[in-house]
Image (tube, rainbow, N blue to C red):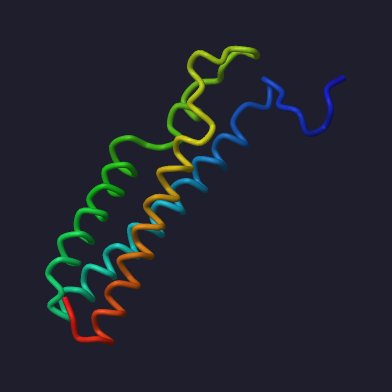
Length: 119
C-alpha cells in the first residue's frame, strides 16, 4: 500500500494541475508588475527603464503564452522511474527568480532615479 503522500497513477491530474495553476499565477504576477513598472517609467520619462520593462514584459509573456512552464507535466503522465522527459528541478524556478529579481531591481532603479532626479 503506497504512503498517503506518494503519487498514484490512477489519481493523475490533481497535483500537476495545481502546479500549473501556481506557475500561471506567479507568471501573471510578474507580468502585471512589469506592465506597471513600464507604465510608471513612461510617466516619469525614464526611457531606459521603459525599454527594460517592456523587454521583461515581453519575455514573461512569451514564457507564459508560448512556452507554458509546466505544460509538459500536465499534458502527459510519466511512467515511474522515467527521468528522460523530466525537466530539470530548478529550470523554471530559476527563470522565475531571475524575472522577479529583475523586476525588483528595475523598480528600485526607478524609485532611486525619481528620488535623485537621474536617468
